[in-house]
Length: 387
Image (tube, rainbow, N blue to C red; front, top):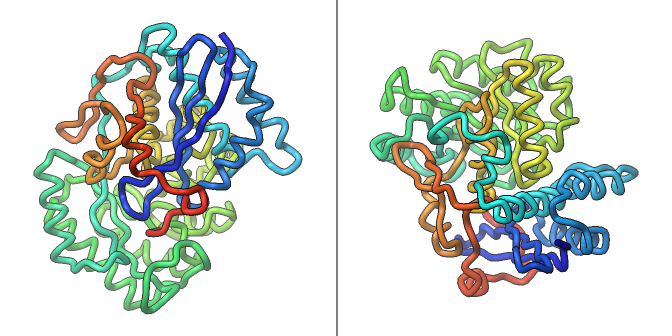
């Protein structure tokens, strides 16, 4: 069997949220499906896939590791992380999908078989920067708990980057004011009061804040018994993360902004985080997600993969989670599940706050191409507009 083509699709069933899918085609008619959707410029990733096609076409799709290393090593002089590891991710997921289809088994069977019956999830309620009231957020949390979810994450911090207007993302490092920290404490306190002491509650700072104000916020939030404080400081500096670690008494989760196993080595060696959360669509696909999980397992650190974008990322991460011993929970935004069904033919069954296997071969889903085309956007519009 040989790879004959790689195709990409940018589609947007949810306004402002484009997804980038990858299909790897073979001369025997078996096609693999991957995803490398990004919060930033999907067009950059799409162009990257186009640039590596000459290296990949003609290869045996069964040689997943060889193709992974080929793309990664040929980019070492400019760095194999970020856009390059996202390119690898989309192709790698599709190759595992092909292998599962050829052998007639789900990918998790190829990773050693299941270690659980289902994969527990955590999901999101509103973030404070989105503009809802505390009462509206509490109502959403109440409904989410009633739907069977047992763990919720929120960003309780107002945007300090702009005192008015939309959130600008990580365009600059922000400093939390005392009033913003007080608002965050009210936000989280209301959720804790509604959900109860035993409900799992996480806070996400989206790597936005300087060290001093992140520490001040953590100290105010400690009393709410959070499962973790996520990305408290910008991801570029391990020293900044270490300073936060040494001056707060709160569990830390990092990893969605780290790429490949190599970025996780200092985090684990220096005990800078209590949870690691790599993203399958950015860090290097199924192959690398599995390696990062195993690396974390050797330090007894739970693995809790980031999964905030499209259906293929959710479905392929699920395959890894089924076979990973040190899993905490898989992330999702449950409100998007109905939108997933607009463009894929099926999804793992979700109920009781968990995903359940369907035992279809490969990653278990296929694109509905006419619907992908219906929601298609030009490459020039393949940028997230709501983050």
